[in-house]
Length: 102
Image (cartoon, rainbow, N blue to C red; front, side, top):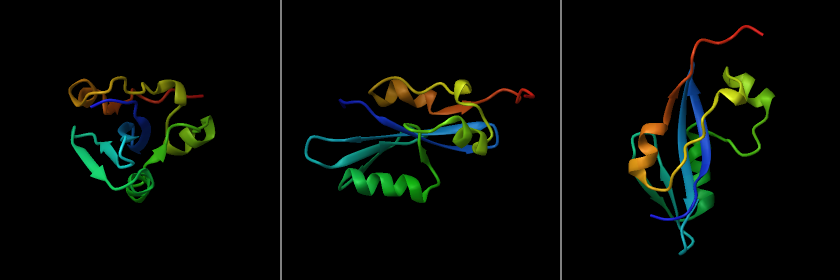
């Protein structure tokens, strides 16, 4: 595996679930999910559509208001780092602490 993932997230209460999507040299794409599975897609657009259908939002471009709608602050998030499944898998489910009162 090579290349950087674009990160997407969904949330369940105070748990953030990450998925990474990346385009491969042949123009196909793959998603790494929170279970550490790699799923192949025929194009980057198809992979992104699958994430949107599963209620994921792109992290790139997310602002504070978007995050607050999901119940957290952007600064609480730890974006996964790595390019291989073994490194990424333990980072793909992030349990946030108790919400601080603003």
